[in-house]
Amino acid sequence: MGETYALLVQIESHEYYGEFYLVGEGYGTPAEVLEYVAGDHLLRMSDALRIEEYLLDVLNEGKNASKDEYDATDADIECWIHGDVSYRRYAFGWDDTMTEFTEEPTESEIASKVEDLQS
Image (cartoon, rainbow, N blue to C red; front, side, top):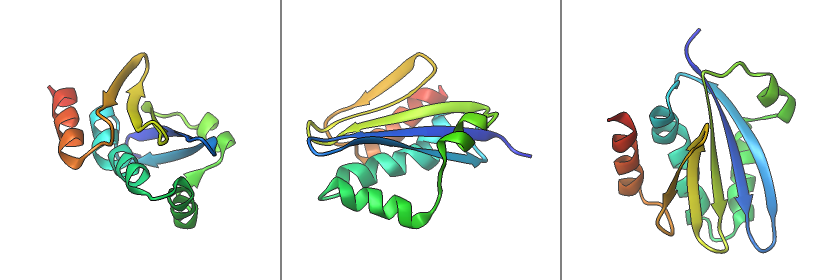
């Protein structure tokens, strides 16, 4: 079995606060999780006209995990993303480490942060 990741996705806006969980295989470092999973969610979250669109999109994909499954996962790496869409503040983190994005994340900014994490 490959490397396992667990990703907590926290979303905050004037109308909503909540979180959901993603668990998967194939990525075992913060850089890999940011590049292949979290970065996509950050972009989709910041690009959505309304946060409900993003949430519905994620639920329709059916890739989110239950809290029990997330808690029971023996992950090689546990990461999180936080999006405060009302104030356009986004962050990615793991353990006691956090990296913030300037207003709305872009593909180039995510790629730059991935490169920094790999060095």
